[in-house]
Image (cartoon, helix red, strand yellow):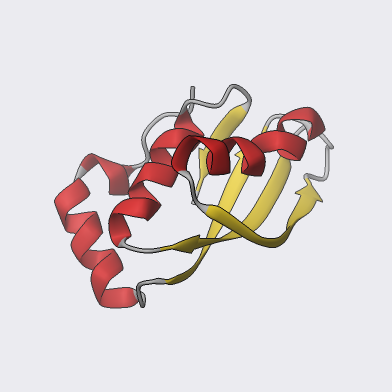
Length: 101
């Protein structure tokens, strides 16, 4: 399980930041770091299933130079800042996800 990043440790402040910096409802881009291609292939479907958020378009995958990790960039339709937080919490429960931005 991925460790909570600093921005999730102070959720009220993070929600206020999201509200100030983004337009809701709208598109929100997530970057997810996965340990290998197998996790990367299914991570967006799992986030969508866990949260009910709709994936927009096809996720982009970029392997690390060593090929050990894969960065997944995906756009989801979110209704509110709390949807972003729910997605991050869902990501941290997925085996093989080692980080996210």
